[in-house]
Length: 76
Image (cartoon, rainbow, N blue to C red; front, side, top):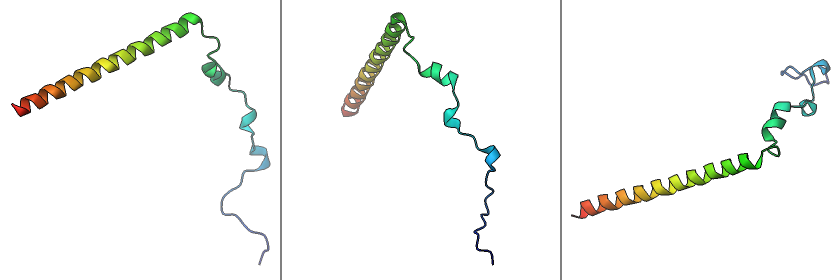
């Protein structure tokens, strides 16, 4: 019997080893680098977020009103 353990899974050869941590990803750097945003872009994004929050609050208020009306109709 052989004293060496034979693995059933194929192992990569040394020629196929690649250290991907050293590969530069320029697209990722651009996507995550928001330091280049102008004040106007940041302001527009902030305004968009605030508008979305206002819409959500209004939708929740309308849903609560509808539930209240439905409950009142059931009681009547």
